[in-house]
Amino acid sequence: MPRTATRRRKPIGGSAWIPQSMERWKLEDAKARLSEVVRLAGTEGPQLVTIRGKEAAVILAPEAYKQMLPKPKGHQPLVRFLQGLGLSDLDLEREPDAGREIAL
Image 1 (cartoon, rainbow, N blue to C red):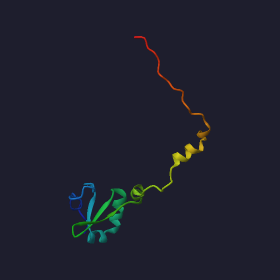
Image 2: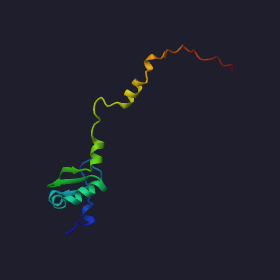
Image 3: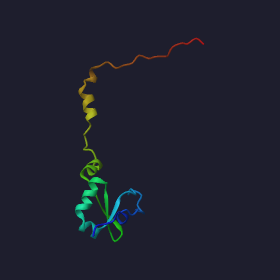
Image 4: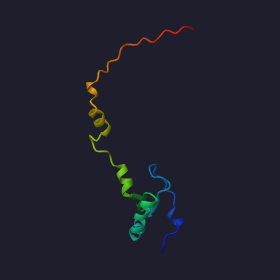
């Protein structure tokens, strides 16, 4: 029996980090309809799986998961670019500037 849109679109309360638009699935429903849960994660966003009414897991599309991963340490392309410019050879000392006199 396919799930109805009204049954699938229950608001989620109790957790501030979970967006209201995230769909909620009971574990037994998610197991029975895993293909649908995975497809919806890719098209509609993360899918929340619950066990006995408590949040247990979130199914994400790979792109969403990759965005959440921390960047590797030392991965600073801008820093490497600036270091490669050879700016250390430039004389970057600035002469003192007291401003200019303006007649009022």
